Length: 177
Image (cartoon, rainbow, N blue to C red):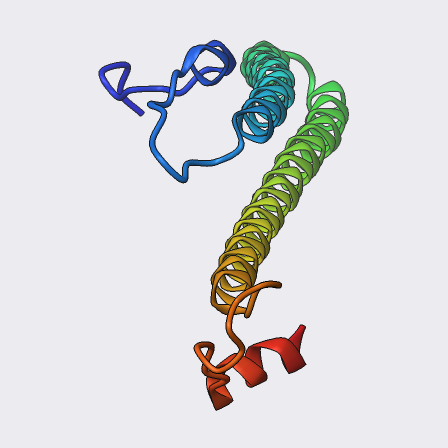
C-alpha cells in the first residue's frame, strides 16, 4: 500500500464531530460507538504490528538460512580439494543440512501463510459482524420510528372518537407491536 492513501486512526474516530440534525442519532450512543470503533482499531493496529514484527523476524531467519546455505556451498568447494573420502562425507552432511534448512524455511513460510489466512478470515468475520450489527441497528431505528408514527396516529383521551379514524393499517401496526 502507498503512504499517500488516507488511513483511519483511532484518534481520527475519537475526534470526529458529527453535525447535529433534527431527528438525529442519540449523541451518547454515537460517542459510545466511536469509542468502540477506536478501541477495535487500536487492537487491530497492535495485531498488525505484531504480525509485521513476526514477519520481519521470519525474513531475518530466512536470510540467515540463505547465508548458511552459501557458507555450506563455500565449504563444499574447499572440501572438493581434500581426499575423496572426506569430500564424500562432507557432501552428505551438507546435503542433510540443506534439506533441513529448506524444510525449516518451508515450514516457517507455511505457518505464516496459514496465520495470514486465519487473520484474513477473522477480519472477514469481524466485517460480517459489523454489517449485521448495523443492520440490527437500522431495523431497531425503523421499528422505533414506526412506533412513533403509530403513537401519533393513535386516538388521544379527550378527542372526539368519531374524529379519529381507525384504519386497517393502524390496527396492523398495533397488532405487530
